[in-house]
Length: 331
Image (cartoon, rainbow, N blue to C red; front, side):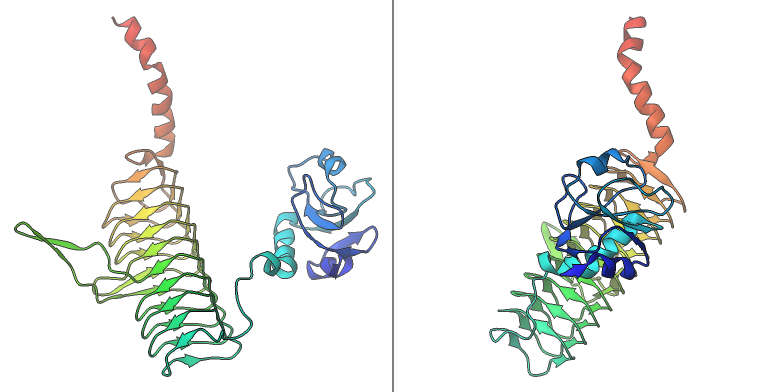
């Protein structure tokens, strides 16, 4: 176990109160004895009366609370708390990896494997795959021919990565995700529907996180691209040839149509749909359940079906509620 004073040193915080061993991290309410929690800047001291946790991360901008607890004062309690969780407690509940290469893994002789790599049971590694240092691959995964997985990346169990995919440093791919399958390209020939061949690839840049159950299709001729630092929630579909910029946030069940392009720092709320061949500018925000039917300029904030300026959408919503009354007056 880790001590309260060690945690305070890690986040460069000031510890006030007794030093003791910390067993884990938990929500402030209900909390738990010998566990660490944090008090958000917008929460009152009343929460400290209710919590059972006796190590609390608080802001150094507020007075020291008069409670029989130990406090760690920092500039940003939320950020510091989750840095603590990531360093000391994350792996206890989220480690689905072996420490080595499992004896049931099937690995091609032409695979290049770096140092401190772990590969789980029943995983298949195809020909000419390159796995760099500190990569961890869970059980029951499939890694296709010619794929390269760069340093520090984590591939959770039951993930499928097709041929010739590039995954750069420190990427996290959660379970059930499929990367590099054929896109939905169809040509109609008389009464017959013909699948367009897809000979492109997928490139996932550094520090990307991809949630569970996502599908990212390979490019038709070039590549589908996920930009550096982008975070993708579960059950998201990204079609062929899509280009996503840096540090985007894509919430659950979003679908992005083929060949659309997202700029940097774009946020798409849950269940957003983006039709094909659009350009979404930098710093755009799209509200949940919206349907984006046309390209958006930089900094646009939109919502609705079809997606329009968010403030305009709110004004229209107010007018809609008045329609029954207006109808009665004009009868």
